[in-house]
Image (spheres, rainbow, N blue to C red):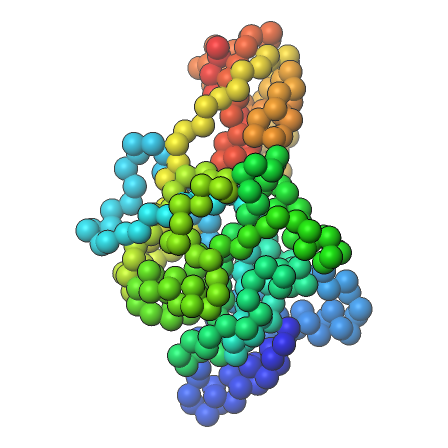
Amino acid sequence: MENLEGLVNKAKVAYYNGMPIMSDELYDRLEDQLDTLNQVVGMRVDEKSARWSHYYPMYSLQKVYDNDAGPDYKKQPVVVSPKLDGAAVSLQYIQGRLSLALTRGDGKKGLDITDNIRHIVPINILPAMGEDMLQITGEVVAPATIKNSRNYAAGALSLHDSNEFQKRDLTFIAYGVQPYPTDDFMLDMKFLAACGFKTIIDSDYKQFPQDGQVWRVINNDAFENLGYTGHHPRGAFAHKVKQAGVVTKLLDVVWQVGKSGNVSPVGILEPVNIDGATVSRATLHNIAIIEQLDLEIGCDVEVIRAGEIIPQIVARV
């Protein structure tokens, strides 16, 4: 957390002199980081298990499938880039030096992975005009030839042995920087390239696993003017192709009580491998889905992992 306390004090002095250098919201996040640091030191908490605030939230992307209509950008130019399938992380640079690297976590706070990530990203970067702090976001990916490459990349970040981490075949590819160095996303990526990063516009990255494309408004002012929902920016979306399902047998249906108290059916399946994960249970949501799909115990069903995560029965075969 190099230079963090100095930056917080500088922002505090500037604020009381009537010349703030950052928004109240960003200042609060920095103070939250400092509080976490003091807690780690004062209480001897394991720093690796502490959760730190991202300087800027890491939003997910709205998903648009196949020929579904995407957001209307009113003829704003967009850039289309690969949607890499790895582990999203944020890098915090204070006065041009790497200070903190975090896993995405819940998008607001993540785990400290600085000791590992410093081996695959620049330690020092070019200063951005008038900015003491930069947050650079991107994806840590492993070659698609490695089995379960997404899990391989995510698991490597949490290794406690940095020497072991360095043996892993991993690459960091940047796709965002805040505050924006320019008013144009493409120029922002060129700035990151000049800092020594591989960026998302440099290549099609076919050697790494992908799960669609990212469409983003190029002009940063237009991007911000489109705003955000509670989960994603409106100025970008992920375009995906609907997954092909895997066929297995429905062995039983059980009922479970969710956190909200709702009771819902769950299909018990003959175990099957989907995208490297063994699936033996799948959500059925409600009795209407069972009737709509005409499901019976013992029938063959088509199963996907919705959002690449949640097993879901989509059809009777």
